[in-house]
Amino acid sequence: MESIILGIVQGSATLLDPAILALIIGGTIFGILIGALPGLTSTMGVALLVPVTFAMSATQGLALLGAIYCSSTYAGAISAILINIPGTPANCCTILDGYPMTKNGEASRAIALATVASAIGGMASTVALLFLAPPLAELALRFGSQEYFLLALFGVSVIASLSNGNMLKGFIAGILGLFLSSIGMHPITGDLRFTMGIPELYNGLPLVVALIGLYSVPEVIATLRDPGACAVGGVAEVRGVFGQMLEVFKYKVVMLRASVIGTVVGIVPGAGSSIASFIAYDDAKKNSKRPGDFGLGSAEGLIASETANNAVVGGSLVPTLTLGIPGNSVSAVLLGGLLVHGLKPGPALFADDSGTVYGFIMSLFVANLVFVPVGLLVARFGVKFIKMPATILGPLVLGLAVIGSYAINASLAEVWIMVAIGFLGFLLKEFGMPREPLVLGLVLGSMAEGELSRSLALVRNGVPELLASFVSRPLSLVILALTLLSVFKGALSQRKRK
Amino acid sequence: MLALSIALSIKAFTYPAESAQFPRFLTVLQVLFSAGLLVRSIVGRRGEPPRDEPGRRPSLIAPLAVFSSLGLYIVCIQYLGYFVSTALFLAISMIYLGRHRPLVVFGATAAFILVVYSLFVLFIGVRLPRGMLF
Image (cartoon, rainbow over all chains, first blue to last red; front, side, top):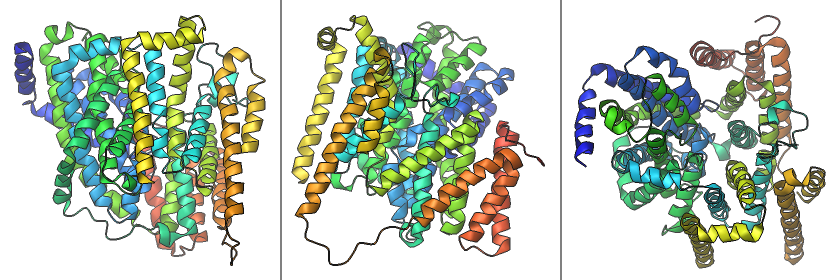
């Protein structure tokens, strides 16, 4: 404990360097631009600026990269709320309540809530990183194939919550999403499935491209069909925003639970922010006094998903810094940044390079504070953008969808894939099927299939042996129990509503 | 959905068993759920009283216009390059949708292309397709 406090003091002292503060502000602005634009991901943003950090000191470089990570994860909420396209996969749950709030004329309130919730989630997980890194790293090491598969199953149990009363349609959409995730190479055998000879599908359906198509195209069609119904209602100005920001503190319990969920999911390498936000959303819905409001512009739903996805930031850095195992793709790139500056991740990092490490962690606190005013300023322009008439906004959103899909891998084939998924999204919307379960299936499917295959291989393909291994491993038992509890609670609350 | 599920199920059974366990399981499940949805919708309709007025079907003009224009746009990118195709796509779309003031159309198109060029080309370094002109 004394060493942690000493580290905090050392780390805070490094922040007095004006160059570091300038880099945090610059990184925040860059990260917000990256995150708010569909097609550009946090990973891309951090990777682009790693070479720029070569000329900087380790603390300066890491402060810049950390600021980009925090702000880009948050900024995806801006496009999710304003134009119904998640800026990053971490924000696909934000659409569920963020965009309905915009349609209700509460765009500025939605952005204010999302901004503060993201900052709080990010800071909470940074506290966990600061004080709980070693025990959390131990927990991360206990995750094997069985635990990963059960985590995916736990995520799938959330599908019922996203189905808005029509569970059969929700499950059909969820299974479709799981099926779409099986397109491409089998994780063990390497056999190609359902690729139709398209090389861009060999590695699976690109998630960001699918998200852009699924949400942008159907919304543009709906807007063009009935501009009056889809118009942003009311005066969506970003004035009086401080009052709206303070409103988030009415939902302290929601934020606390979502922060814990995001941090814990973040420490599991490969789990991802989208899983954290779906689980937090489901948890908030099941524990809410007004679950019927979810999906119609519920502040709780928005706050839960945004708190959780930013809480993943600190969580993902736990295995990255303490074990050298990246929590997700962004922290993998950050790990590269660490190595470039001569830092060796592992238990000794906190002792041998305490000034740099604690300086980096303290800079994350500052970054989570800086993105609040910067994000609100960017959102002010975004709100003006969405007040444009549908005859201008529609073509611009489609143009953005095309460039966003192209920019990921500089591939026109992926733009065609975006249009095809857009057609699927249109059909789903036309027949009243929710799209969120499909997204969840897409996110979880490859993890579920891959880890199930590995688990079966470990027990030599014996299904009874596999089931026995779930019960014999304490962590598996905990996740299984949480899954059953989640399903039971969901069924109970559905019955209460009827 | 039922027809699609059956077709995908048949395709899934053509792949080697070891690689296709997961999609086979999912497509069979999908067939069952889709059949359940179909039965439910038929039973539901039989229970409803006849409608006095025919329901208004949503127009297919908007979806047809969006998908065909997107398809044409992507094809044009390969031949005319990204910037020329984008300018044409945005301008023609806005004019077709009723936005006739040239200044507004030009302004919105120019602003979009400027933002894309600054951010994606200059800042991030994405190589956009070049056409016959640029």
